[in-house]
Image (cartoon, rainbow, N blue to C red; front, side, top):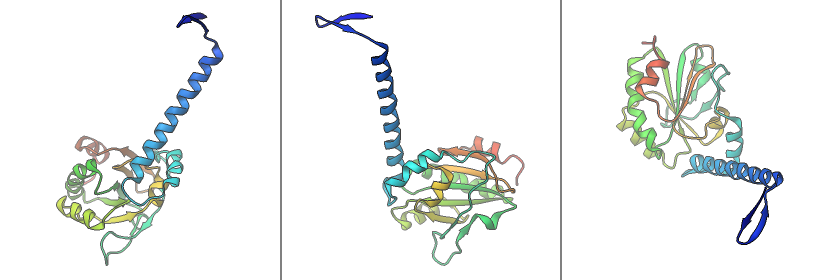
Length: 197
């Protein structure tokens, strides 16, 4: 359908509309990829080229087998944190970092919940940390006593984590029962852990 713009006749074709849609989609995808890079890499040491693979993998879905991990403890002298050792138990895995504001707000709730549900094994994975001292200080202030491992990118890659905090509830059979990106709330935890205690 022709139209007039600045004294000129402009013909709008389906081809130009298609091209505009393609360009729009491409811009949106690039924006999302850049957002993933910012979320995962700031402010730590992870290599940006791995982020695209994480974004493409997608968050690990309920019903799928939880990837195993064996990561060093945040605390010197403590044993490595291994998911395989917890097989047969319900496990809540929480990915966090001391520089993540929602993580700071979430950790005290996780600490209280862990103490009220001794039948559930809680595990924290400190991701892409700038300072282990900052992480230990935050955990002490939040009264977290469950095991904390450290990860520079390999475990979050397996789980498809592209933002913090992110948590997974893993059943005794080793499969993901629930997954949640963003801070957990008391309401969500009550739904995840209704019968444990």
